[in-house]
Length: 312
Image 1 (tube, rainbow, N blue to C red):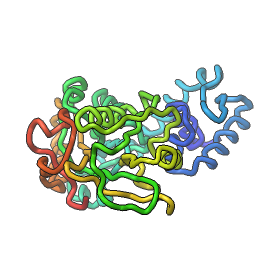
Image 2 (image 1 turned 60 degrees about the vertical axis):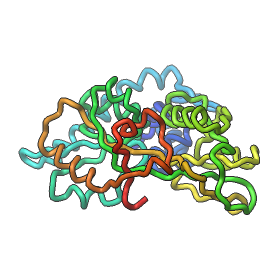
Image 3 (image 1 turned 120 degrees about the vertical axis):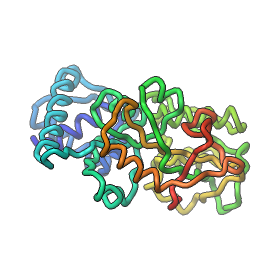
């Protein structure tokens, strides 16, 4: 049994979905399933009960989960200690889906930054920042979330969202003709569900509720084919190419944008942390809200400083 097997177990235990856990770990879903089976053989115990529609922890899985969480946290702390940069411990950064491709180059001359290996939903990363588990996170939050968690934030990227539909028609879609998917997993898809519901309420897109995690991946494309309508593509699905029988289509203004923000504890006065914030903030530029749409409670809509990455 290796530490990576315990990380795999923890990811599946937190997601209760092999597909989402595999995307979070950036490995193939069949490989993850095989690794979990290998761990169960090593332990001579079944950790999950799974069928084609659900994954749940067994009583043994629930019993060992706290110990696995504690062990992985200890291993991460050990790693940070081993990195040992004398007085300059690395800043710990978590993320939900997107990281700047040149993060290490941007921060190299400012402060060491350790990117946490746990890719978790935005609200969980925000809670980890608030509790001191990590120093920074790149995630999607809204202004009430900042107050609830005691955090501050600055925008570093916004992604222009597109639709996917059947056929070969690649013309722009009216936002009112869009379908937006909302998943029954209110924890794993909390941020996307909130965004989709607010878009539908503000601009008239139609909500279709699903229960299979098909916000992204192959099941998303299945829903596009099934519905026969343009469906809004989430930013989390950026690694999956559109199949040849489907087409990606732009959206007429106001175009929906998904924003990523850098968040930190409001009480943190660490000078190196604020230097990193300044460096990452410098990579953003204004977003024209006359032609772009973000929710009313998007972090910087109310402050008039919504920004997007220059490489968008």
